[in-house]
Length: 74
Image: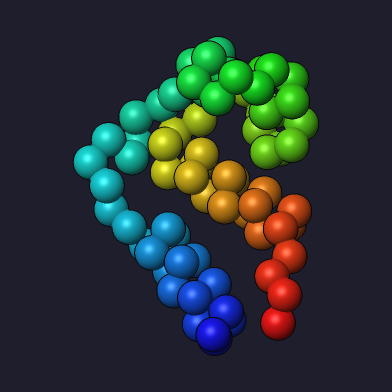
């Protein structure tokens, strides 16, 4: 399986996707309630400043976090 091809395709989709509501903000409190992670953990791990983030920025931050913490075996 060509994991590099999969990784690049996923990145392209996330960074170039135009989704309705992308620019709408979501608060860290809402994210914490939805994910059951503490707000401080979310801020620290996703490197988020402030108490609100756009959905597009949130998707990008989560993808960056996953890429940092998950290693594909090649």
